[in-house]
Image (cartoon, rainbow, N blue to C red):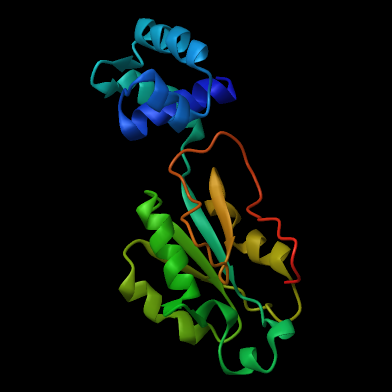
Length: 194
């Protein structure tokens, strides 16, 4: 499936079949592409007048995000003295705990299977298990001598089509989707000093 085909089929899954003008906006593809491709999707049985079909969902299956791994094991040494009191992922930004906001955004996108790898001040995060259903915790006992690569190594059996996140990310808008065409690195370019 090409990126444009994915964009269009995923837009149909999320919003149903809309006007060509609306589909152009939602899928970021040309109007000519929409007409031809919707016809092809209908012929393949991927969509009908109501929206995406079971066959269409099967076509999207290779792009479904299985889960997320949140790295929260590090000591956050660049944040000393703040991180001496609590890990970065537990800091409050705009009245929200960073890691809680990220878990909520993942869950809003349909990502229910979430693994958190903990190390430094791990006990401070344990409350998350009772607050969020489906959360798994892994402990990195070597957090003070090994880096993110080891953290991911400990979570390797969970890594498939996986979001790999840092516990201290704050996203104004939810960047997570239930289906993703290819891997990417979440970043925003800013011109001012950060």
